[in-house]
Image 1 (cartoon, protein in one colour):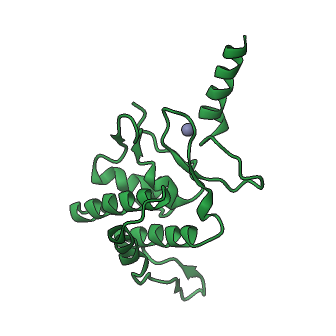
Image 2 (cartoon, helix red, strand yellow):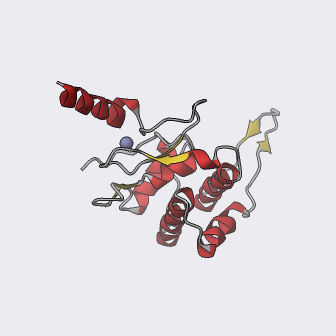
Amino acid sequence: MDTRFTWVGGRPSVDFTATLGKREQAPFERIPEPADLGRWFREAGLTQDEPAVPGRAYRQAVELREALYRLFTGTRHAADLEVVNRWSSRPLAGPRLTSELRAESATVDLPGLLSSLARDAVDLLSGPLADRIRTCAADECSLLFVDASRAGRRRWCSMNTCGARAKMATYRAVG
Ligand SMILES: [Zn+2]
């Protein structure tokens, strides 16, 4: 089981849904512990220091993740919108000015990080790429990605993994 994080979504909110792997077959948790969630935010580049993750915030993060997944895959539940809106409408701390006149980003806590994910999702779902959110075409892969290609015909989460495997299968079938 590969518990490394994947970054093929094109948007942080989409990558966040990939922290539950193999959704359609044998789902497995890539963030089984609160500390894993902190690590995800650091590896996602959303914070330099791993934030502390209290148990309640961890459960809220998983709740937000599942609401995002349903919204990205076309399910519309009022409860999911409520979860996303609760986080997206939360005020975020702005930058601070130091005595040397440098901008210093505010310390981001876990609620702030969840808020930034929710804001990313609002921007995506209300924007021009909303109908370009796709599930990878490979049977064994449930990763979502945003198809930002001009033609809009991207089928695989990544050409290096699922795309390459599909190509190999085609060659084998022909040969
Ligand atoms: Zn894939």
